[in-house]
Image 1 (cartoon, rainbow, N blue to C red):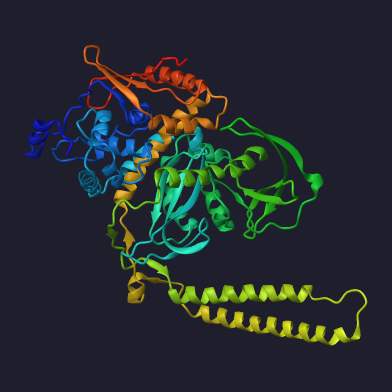
Image 2 (spheres, rainbow, N blue to C red):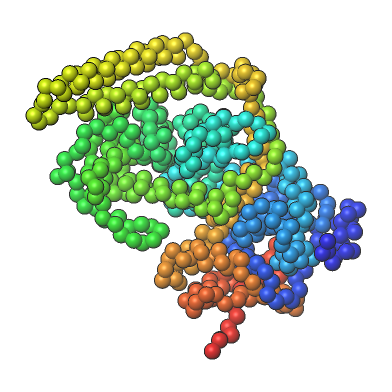
Length: 565
């Protein structure tokens, strides 16, 4: 439906055409044509650079590059599911790509399924991550690691339950561990169908990959000559707090910054001094009250402990094995973890990060270890009993007779105290019994040893990883354009929203075959300041002299200059 290039489609249907060449026609008011403003950034972030090294498509109407451009453009235009294409004008999207129409939903899904079946998504994503790190060595020196739970509501498999903080519920989900830069830009992610925690994935997958790929690391001789020097820094929340892990990383010359999970006594206020911090992203200055001490952990490791005094008197405790940096940058780097949280929130809302791409299921090896359901059940009972006992102890401590004590109140008071004491002792016995029972139960068992009704498979990963990698490229491209626009806008926070509106704006497409140029003429924006910023962006994009992939047409960016009285 909607196809006008009938001859080439006939040739493609019989296998005699390996991709049609883009041909642009003069068009006005093309919907979503503003997304072409993101093309130079997509190409510079490596969307198409090495595709031929990892993927291939059989002879057909659409080329490999066109399929990936479609996926990236749809992401930037907030088309959150491919089914939405059924309600979009295929010819309008075709004009943006220099085609007669965009692929149908079933065609696009078949292409993605074919590409995913080649099992190269992880390798391609790793190559892109390596390239991004090398292009920004400073950002690769401080890396943020955090887990993100993707809730699964389907019925194809019964995934293990995880606590989802944003829902405040334990739901069936799979866990992705993301590695991001200081400003939130993603490098790569690791999926865990069976999650044994942040420390496990750090030891087994993330740290070995970073030691191999992070650029600008000191040489072995430099590390040997300077005991305080480190390769790079890892930042994560309290889930990763572990004295033993920090010691392991110290031996590998990797610095750790995290929150102290068990801070001791409150420090004296006179120890704190004012430090002025300037946020790199916004340029906003903030005064912080900081203090520092040396601390020895339970395993004997000597670390730095930094505390930040809040306006309400709370002291946030930070621990680090970075022995070289000043305390101000260390505090900034930890408190900048909000950038990664914001990344998850933004990607869920704008790029539909948690959406399934297909309904495929992957088999998990039968020898893979999981938490024993019996162990988990008795642990749950143990925690419940401990929490109840703690509440009764609090009630016991708060139950006091004050002031003038009347004789008739003494006996009921003593009876209530005695009852609470008995309850506390009963729960203590229950807790001790549960602990003894738990010692007799094996904590981890193989999947093959699970009861039949509790066994599960993993969600299909390849197609999800492929699409998420394209979304990472799209996000990094959007961020790059927003950073450029910030120079020309008074309201820096409006830059990303303006890029978002630009991608979904109408534009005129004006090809000049004689001069081999394709002019993208964007329509006016909501205010003069935004128009001025976009015009300056056009100038910077024109300096890239970007050639539309698969053609010889150089892109020229401009804006309608008509004035309205």
